[in-house]
Image 1 (cartoon, rainbow, N blue to C red):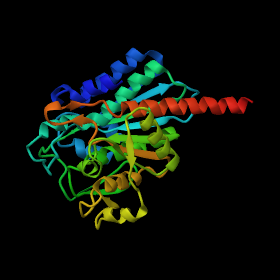
Image 2: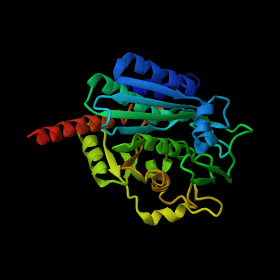
Image 3: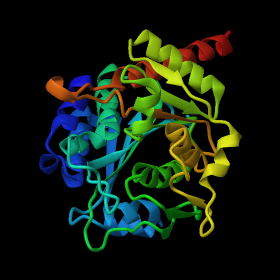
Image 4: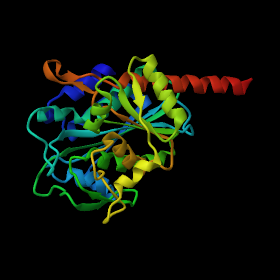
Amino acid sequence: GVEYAREWANRPANHATPRLLADAARDLARRAGSSVKCQVLREREIEDLGMGAFLAVARGSHEPPRFIVLRYEGSKKREAPVVLVGKGITFDTGGISIKPAPEMDEMKFDMSGAASVLGAFEAIARLKPALNVVGLIPACENMPDGRAVKPGDVVKSMSGQTIEILNTDAEGRLILCDAMTYAERDEPAVVIDIATLTGACIIALGRHPHGLLSNHPPLAHALTAAGQAAADRVWELPLWEDYQEGLDSNFADMANIAGSRDGGAIMAACFLSRFAKKYHWAHLDIAGTAWKTGKAKGATGRPVPLLTQYLLDRAAEAQREDGRAAH
C-alpha cells in the first residue's frame, strides 16, 4: 500500500492527471476482484450534485475533474462504513494567487492525500478486514487560466453554504468540503480526510508527525494509538470554537481563509469542520509528512500505515464486540 501511494504521488503531474488517477482507481478495483467497487463521476455529474466549491477550483484547468468513489465491502451491507476522503489536487500552481517559482515542481505531491487513499485500499484489498470502507477522491488541477476563480469570488458548496474565496491557493479545503458533504449519503461511522493542506502545519509540527484535528475525542485517540503502533505518528491540535470567528465574511457564510496567518493549520480544519456536523470526523494534515524535499525528494507513502492500522484495529474491535454480544 505504501509503495502504491508513493508510485502515484511521485509521478509527474502530466502522468498523474485526474483522468489517469481515475484509471488507477478502476485498475485497483479490477485487481481486487469483487471486494472493491469503483465509480468515477465526470464534470457534468459533479455539477449535477451541486459541488460548486470543487468545480470552482477545477475551472481554471483544461484537464477535466473527476470524482472517484471506491467501496470496499468486507462486512454486512447495513454496517456503517469508514469514509476516507483524499485531497486530489494533481498539480497546484496556487491559481490566481500564484505560488512562488522555487520548488513549485513539488506541487505534484499535492495529491498525496488521494494517493494515500489508493494505498490504503490496496492494502485492505489484500488483508481483507471485516468492515466497510468508502474512499472519496475529488481530483482536479488548480491552474490560473482565464476562467479560473478569482479572489473575492463567492461560490456555493454542495451543502448549500456559501464561501468567499479570499485566496485561490487555499483550494484543498474547497474540494474536500464538497466530498465531505457527499460522504453524508453513506451515513458513515466516521469520516477521515487526508490532505496536504497547509504549510502552517509544517511550521507548527515540523515534518515528523501528521497534524490531527477532530470533532470526536474517541476517534482522535484511536488514530493516535494506530499511529503509534504503525510508527506513523500524529499530533493533535485544538479545534476550539474560539477560532471559528476568524472565518467570518461580509459577503458569504464563511471565507476560505482567516484574516491573519495565525494558527493556519487550525483555521483550515475549522473551515472543514463546518461540513462535518452530521458525523464523527478527523482531519489529517500531511503537508509536512507526505514527501521529502531537497536531495531526498520523493513521496513517503504516509499515512498509509496509520490508515491501514486504524482500519485493522477497528475491524478487530468490532469482532471483539460481536464476541461479547454472542456470550
